Image (tube, rainbow, N blue to C red; front, side):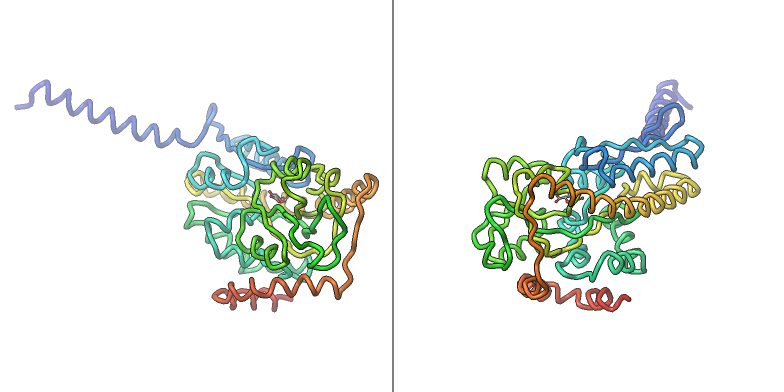
Length: 334
Ligand code: GCU
């Protein structure tokens, strides 16, 4: 015979289970049936990546008939890149646009896409990233509970400092140069004879201004958008590295969308990425002009001088020996 207390216990357990399911469903942020996704971004509002993130959000909003709303948080409002990547991994933030340098910390193999002097130029890099290798890397993030949606461009990076003109590696001896949190970049700067100082992006300006560091390295638009040009006027055009950028999404967030929504998200991210690449090229030229107007002293390396820097990257290739096949695949991409 069934007692009332037994029935109550069963009812109680049933309620807890039901509540658990409801909680699971609600876990994806919704508002009146609309899915709200947060996208983290560390650049200033009118930067090419942010403009592209916004285009991405608008396209998704239109094509999902207003069912998915992506909110872009620029200027590092949700944290610096290292922390944002962790937050996307654990689903605290749904999406982010990040440089792949800090991704190397969670997946060492990404370093192979960010080796110094790896790509011949922008076109070469995007041939690689748009090909099967780029797809493999995007999908490989699944082991960190994320997916990569589309590749953005971050141009080529150059060294700049507040002290003196740099032409050859020896000129950089003992300079304290900020690097992103990525071992291969620390090694490269060390091999040049300077001291690498890993710092998050938002702290670089203050560190140069107060003399904690002597300089940094970045692409033209970042050099200017952060006002690094105002405190580090010597810039050496050696284009030592191209570091791709990726729009990432948390796996659980993504898996909870319908197949149609997933497709829309991917196609819109790719469209936005194409727009970003065009805007980036324009911005590189614009930033260079602004830097000149504001008194930057530009040193363009000769081929021979550039080779001197390049030779300092050889030991890094040695340390990537286990990825030799991928490096070869990249170099052979026409
Ligand atoms: C570039 C890149 C950023 C990155 C920054 C850095 O500006 O677009 O995502 O944070 O370099 O040097 O840290």
